[in-house]
Amino acid sequence: MKRSLQCVLSTCDLQVIEGTLTMASTFGAKVSVFVRKYRTGLLIAGCGGLFSVNVLYHVFPEQTYKKVYQAWSKDQPASLSDKLEETFQNVLKDMGIQSPKNYKAFAAFGFHPVGAGVPWLPSGAQVGLPANFNSTPDKMEGITNRVVLINGKQVEWDSSSGAALKEALVFSPEAQRFALAREVAWLQDGSPLLHATVAPTCLVGACAYGVAVKQIFGLYAGSALLRGTVNMLALALGAISYALASDAVNQRLEYRSDRRAASLSRDYAKGGLEFYDKIMSRNRTLRALMGPKGEQMYAPTGNLFPASLLTLKHAPYTSRRDRIANLLKDDKA
Image (cartoon, rainbow, N blue to C red):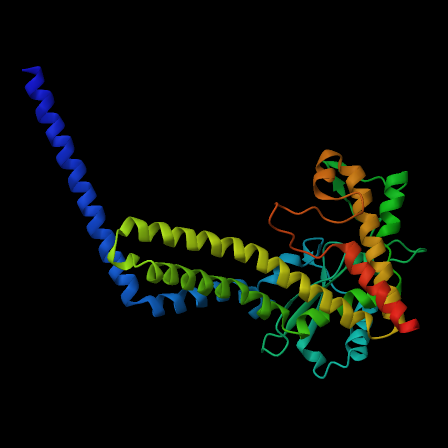
């Protein structure tokens, strides 16, 4: 009786498994037919979606980027000082910007400028200037009047590490102008749009690779499972390509922005050297203050450690400084 019942259950289990496999195979076949039929449309929609996601906050920088980086004071958005507004306008003039109204400055938190937007679109570009750019060696407003917490402890500006951090956050007018010119150059060259094209390009490459492999080996008439495996492999290669290409393009654009800013004059180039020296000094100080976490984030040189083995989003600060130094040497020669 038990054996008969077990046989009946085993037979039922086999039927369920066979039915599930059949349904999965049928579903997979339908999906495969659908994808082949609408391949071009799906690819265009996917590329458009990836491009839109990467460029969205640059199209509407005031409603997105500015709200994220806006500095606040007493529950109100902090206003930009007249000094920094004048510096910003002078940089636009030095760069020969034809439509300065397309670039708007705002008070940002943090310790160096940030920017987003596409200048020739109606929404224009937004550049955030940090409060420490108001500071001078004699007047530390924008630094000492701020509470900076590291590992839950407030930085004591009178301590040796606090004094080192404070010194690294004070930039000369030349370094400030270089930092602003670098952001403006990055936006003026359409870098956000160029960087946003990387993901769609990698998606097209992954799809082309998958189609080519299946056609070369005649997999369209074969197993759906094998075709699915090829698709997964193609997507994995596309993801790896995106990680490498995205960083490579971003670094290339950063080097180009640095060069444009440093090429404005020798003062701008010298300001670039100081800017990166101060950035690296700040990072070395933070590495010491933050302990083990700082050692994971910052290299002894002051460069940023990559987030993973495959990604190094930003060009190393040492390399960016060296390129500006070489530009100055070539200018002297």
